[in-house]
Amino acid sequence: MCRADKSSSSGDGEGSGGGGCSPTITYIFGFCTVAFMASTIALAVVYNQEKDKAAAAAQRAGDPGASAATTDTTTLPWPGSDDPIKAAIEGGYGMSIARPPPGENPCAGMKLTEGFENHQCKVGDVVQALEQAGANVTLGYSGGINATGRIPITEPYWKEGLCPVNVHWHLGAEHYSKGEFDENGSGPSSYRRQLSAAATKDDADTHAHAVEEAQGERDLAGNARLGFQCNLYSSTDPKYNEPYDWNHCIGMEVGQTYEVHWPHSHLGDCETVNQYQTPFYDGVFCNVGLLGPSGRTTWEAIGVHSQVFVIVNDETKYYPDLIKGMVVDPPNGLGVELTKYTGSTTGTSRNNEICSKYAPITWHVDRTCHEVSASSFDKMCADMKTQRDDMSDDLYAHGARELVADFIAANNQVFETGSGGRKMRGGALKSKKELGEMLDHAVNKAYIAENFQY
Image (cartoon, rainbow, N blue to C red; front, side, top):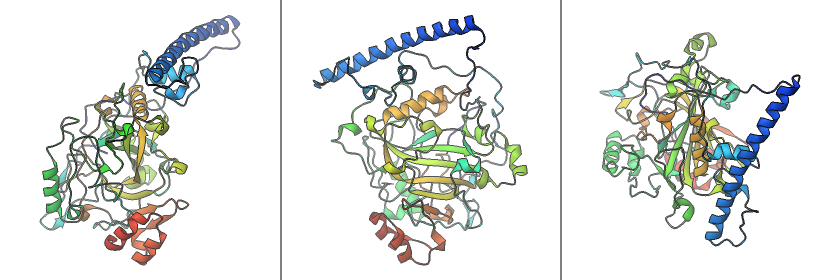
């Protein structure tokens, strides 16, 4: 979670249904039916035109089996739907994107600011900050702050009454997962992170120096700082390099790594048109008066989903509802290998010297890097444009905070593995050997044996 804020915004949520034709008034019903049929025909014409374009492109590419009459909808920018109206709307085929009718936004300006200014992480040898994010989420990792009394939410957020109030993403990963998104990752740009192993430890000076050396080569998204990259990119594979014609997202790059954050809150204006907000703080604190009466702590009322993706030009990796939260698709390995801990908001205004006061809050981080189609991201940006609040400040990647040092990272990690959603607490394990025996991923066993703190 990061970002500089904008002044007041008016946010959205999930669109409201309603309206229709009364079946008791025959002539109105008939009129509406004719109008609907006319609009259906018009959209179907647009849809078929796009099918013809797609077929022609396929034929030019040398696919003899493609024809305008047989082109499947999966060749379209937003596949997976056999409904031409839905496909036309989602694809934005020459259609403007509309928002809900204007109305009062109860979340505008609800960000808490007084007393929440960034502050020194440490004065002398005394740590001044509560636990921070994004931290190392490698299976078995434990930070230096004793946060055992602050247990993160372990159930899915929806079960605890939290709803998503925003979605935004960072250029590269703010979190660190050994072997997934780490110092060995790469992408299509010339920038490549060069962090030593010591830089991921408690040596803040070494880490800061490594980060400073790595800065400066990054200009893809203005001044955005690039975080860790995934270990998936290949310069010879077209899906990581073939450009995508972006319609809604800004400054995105195929083959690049992005960490997506979905802030959730028990205090949001859930299930209304004002649910989604930019800045996300407005959504998180929209009904802050409920915090005391609810009896919840901040880490029980506020949480963030975090998932790291590499953008690919491959429609087999299409997910249509990224705006709603972390993708949970166990058969394909998404949303199953999780690290849950308490931390803070992130962003480049914080580092290992200047910390966030928006803490502690719960984090659910997918430790695995995943591929997702560019069209999935573009569809998410289109959905963001349909919210009542103006989310345009979140249509591009924000800079990544440097990896949180051990001395300001929590020690209360809860690890979920793919083995039946099994939960493990680092400090509760009896030995490194016990942890190693419970792991399913051999790639992490040696790392855990050497680095697990307990």
